[in-house]
Length: 92
Image (cartoon, rainbow, N blue to C red; front, side, top):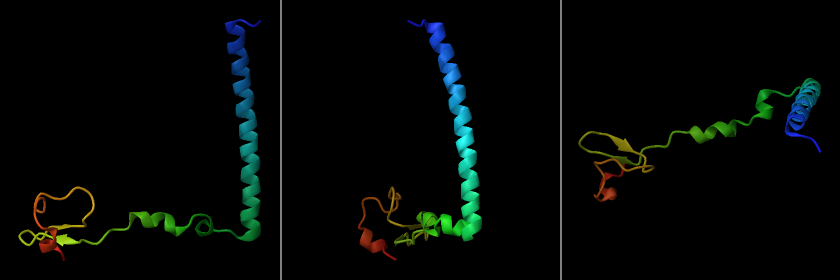
């Protein structure tokens, strides 16, 4: 039966082997991907859809404070000027 120190040393050796194999396989994958990109003339736009960034679209305002002109989309925490009031009167 192995003692604690031997097991720690074995783990270190295994970690080193894992890192070496991971680096080698990563490099092989990169080379393979580069070849496919060149062969099929793949662009960044082909790989990463522009739809990903559409989540950051600005939402149009739905409510307006008639006194200050401040607006609110109706999402998130309601501003103090609309809390407890009929929202329909503030619709844009």
